[in-house]
Image 1: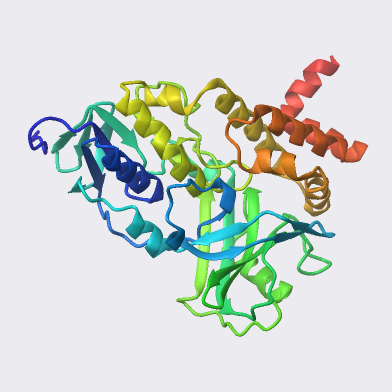
Image 2 (image 1 turned 60 degrees about the horizontal axis):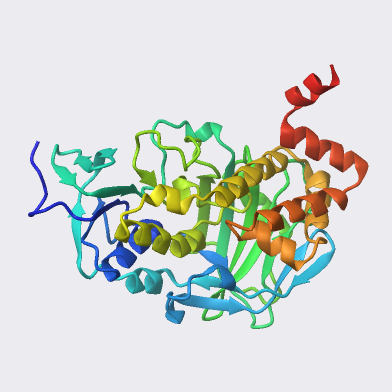
Length: 385
């Protein structure tokens, strides 16, 4: 095998040039570390829509990266509720450009093997590094189809300036809409454009054709002038968990960072804001000579991750009525608990309070269903014996 190294090994090798990998490489180079980035297409356009609550983004992120901002968002459970928490949609081009790779050595190639101190390309060339981080967004050897998934069908159109930003609309597209439940997500993209999306949240998703049918049944925001064309349609489909061992465990693989590294929220599917925010944690650990895995996963973060895994179990398999009741309970619990559960990686007390408050706000039948899904029916049966 030939080495791609030009001199001494770099301080950091990042594999994957998506938002997580590019952010990590960018922040590491800004800190003075020597960095190599490996990706088969490092300048590929990011086509997904990235949304986040504004307070979840790191302070260092340039304001030009925000394409649209809403001071409040609305949820329907089916009751209309207004959340007074600013929400933003990112400008993908501005985000990619702001994460400058100035000073980063770019290796264009596919990683065949990712090891703690080197990356072996499919050409046989080797890229060595003092620390290697896997930001490819996938966990090797995992059957992704067997994992809980999120899937969505959306269309971009033009609407009036008075259209509300809707985070979740759990009202059924029609009274006879069957299980599984789906919700409408409606957000501004800037310049008068709006994304209207029909989303299946978690579990075994319906086909895209069924999501498109529900999208059409639900109708569009007032003043909609968009039409479904190839360029205006967005399809999203991804696993909500990597299926790999707990991300803080050293399984002989380098630290995974980003969506497949435990930074995807198991209940919402959001990962970009957390990845941007956590980049400096990894960089600072490398600068100080510490283990970045330990720095990224203190015990509170591990516990929050485990609690949200249980939350994912609850969401998978719920029917339309149960899902409406669950989110009606969740959004009645107060702003502090919602912020902790939806965003914080370390506020274990806040996450537990939010889960307890949601449980308490649910009727007895709902509580039984939550318990059954949270701890598993087999465990319930064992405790009854």
